[in-house]
Image (cartoon, rainbow, N blue to C red; front, side, top):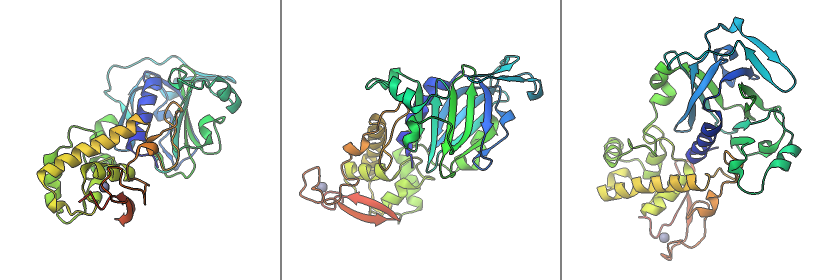
Length: 337
Ligand SMILES: [Zn+2]
């Protein structure tokens, strides 16, 4: 399952290639995953892609004056265009937001030239500096589909843009979704309203953490940090790493944590996530970032999945794996107290 750094990486990649483009075609291939009518987005311009926790929010502005019936769609083998051309209306007065959650197996794959074969992609894929060769931008669940010909059997939606580029939403297990709302309703949506401040936002302060902790004094710190209603976006790998940096045992009840320790914990959460961003994130096994680069965060973890190894800080302890709140937890019992 993609974690915060992975989703942030996809967001940054897509922001580089689809912002400012107008959706000229939308194909809904799955009614469960795609929970809106294609006509509701056709003719809209993508103005920004935002992330809240692990939810991607595509901001759409109404770019069409014509009613959908007046749009004439011309299809040929390699491109689609609509006429009359969209006329942009000012501002986001009646803008919409497209919420996308990748859940377990969702993928977003943008393709500069629709319908490229795996062979063609491999041929043009340079061995280095993929960032300058943006023929494909992909993120989410890692699979050979990163470089395969699309669409495939797991493609749930296809966006077509005014420059003939295409965005595929694939989802093998169909737990992911795309939902459409009015921009004005964004902050009222239950799936966003319940989320605590983003782990990388300024709203996450030590004072906030202590106030929350005072309400649930017996909660173990690991469960406290991974509770999305308290802090949004800290997954299992990053909490284990953060608590190791902070030298705090994952089993400590929050009532015992002192001000100076909260300061260390807060800084360590940010440090762990920023390291994840730097190395392109890390899903459970392999991860390929928005430009096809393999994530290497797993090579930089201190305790996560290092059970039995000597403590990397040289304290003479050994990394142990226990289960906290149902999640595998890695820590050094000697120096994390
Ligand atoms: Zn140690």
